[in-house]
Amino acid sequence: MENPDQPTPTSQTADLLGELSALPSLEDTKTRVQAAMDEITTAASAAIPTAAWQTADNAQEDWCEPPYGTLGRRYFLPNRIAPEVAVSEQNWVDILNVAKGSAAKIGATNVHHS
Image (cartoon, rainbow, N blue to C red; front, side, top):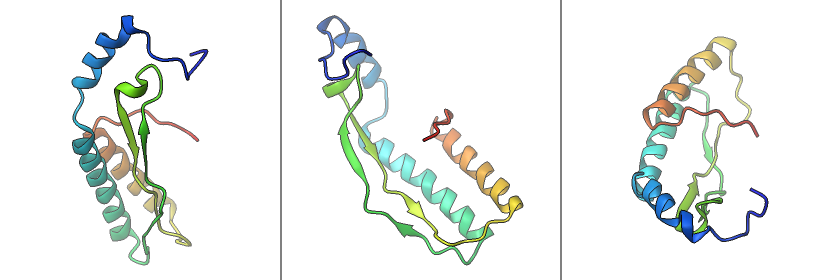
């Protein structure tokens, strides 16, 4: 999109609202994503009992990106971190498989690299 701050054209509003209304509520989505994160951290803790999890103070809620803009909200859960933990190659593969399975249960199958 050339200008991300430009309002959603009114000609697209009804279609976009239809897409958003077909999705679960923001509260339901938060709950489902938190459950997936809990499943992943539980599996990681079972594989690596020395993992001591910390929850960062970086949760964020704001408006959706264009073209949805003010038609919807988005939420980022706080990061869960287990610092200074040695993870074997096999543990990493096992935890990654749990993460992929947990993500798939909530329809999160696209991988985004930052």
